[in-house]
Image 1 (cartoon, rainbow, N blue to C red):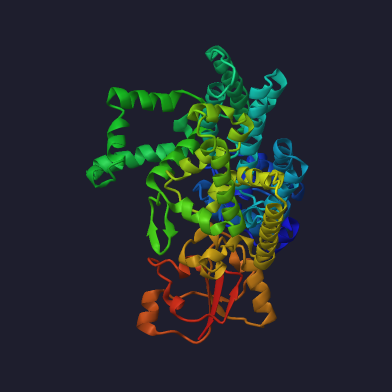
Image 2: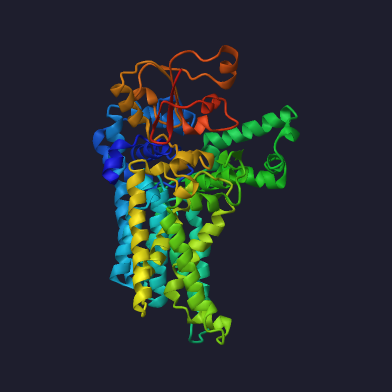
Length: 569
């Protein structure tokens, strides 16, 4: 399935910077492109591209301007290699990561609940529309899910049976996850919480050994620091050597010279004063930036860039609303409508069953004793995804359900317990097994019905993907994945001239010839609609504050997947 989609899906938005960034790291040692993600997945994904002898366009203005989007287009669509070959080869490594994730989901579920549970967990993972949609893309979301599962799995093994070997494996996994995506920093509080929770719920009374706790995390720190330093090519850089930092100081001085400090956002104003080299604090910052070489400097620049990004937020859409600060309930809604109903309903059933059997039942037993009686292996699949999901609710970057992919493997493992439940009464057993079988069949049918448009999947609770745009946009439905399918449709229907507006970062001119500009709302109001074909992506079409939503009141003559709308006037 993933190999098929690797060929059929056109390059999605984030893949451009990831592919071009990864290859430029390997060939130049310069990490300026796409610094908002660590290099691990990008570098490993682009290793196969080294055999294509692609030259890095360091003479292009996008390289000097740090414009990752233009640089991605330049490298992929204007090099000596075919763009489709570049994208295909780069997508092979993410597919391998997806296979490894499937293996560990099966293995973990099997260890907890048995062989049949392992198969069910693997089945749920393999047919998950969200993982099929993302596990073949050169992005960091599936990789982060993999490393989240691996670190909790091996850290749990270490807590159960402490050994240097398991500790070393857990530390290596943590280091790799840490260099996959900046949100992996959440691994730290999760592991600390798990460590102390393990001590709290131990049946035997033992003294909390803080020395051992500090030693464990010292091992994690040392291996992670060494891995990060190595992945960044043992980079040592003084901040003021970077053109971007120099530019920030120039812009600061211009704000002062033009007396424009008070016109800046409240967050910026104190920074202008803080960075004043004439003050003690500002002098310390300036001298540090000028004289101190920072190990793996680009990692820290990227990390603080992501923190800043989250502070300022990102343009997002939810149920007709738009904003930059997000909504605390965004991922709750995304989960409820982007997850198959089978998963949602069975998750609710398992939760109720767990609470009843482990907490509510046997009221004569004290509450804390009930908590301690729960096997720690269950806590390992409960706390980490719960903490991760609750943390996601605080995010100001609401771009898609892909940001909570690390939660799903734990759900699949939990749901796999359904086949291990023992029911004594024959009638109840028949009813239970029949109901579970029907839910599994429905899950399979869900997958078949959405094929091959997995990225645009929405469940039946909202009427399926036909109505998805009423609730979510961006990577939930339209990420540029259907451009190659559009090309085939245009060729089949012999359509030569058309107005296009496509959401994505690829160079659409590689696939589409004779494109005409797409008129804005105001142009249509003033001049009307000229006869012809008008092709527009779901993103700009359904953005209520955008400049191109005028066609949404008309009926399209066709749709490519659920992300591209075609009109004829």
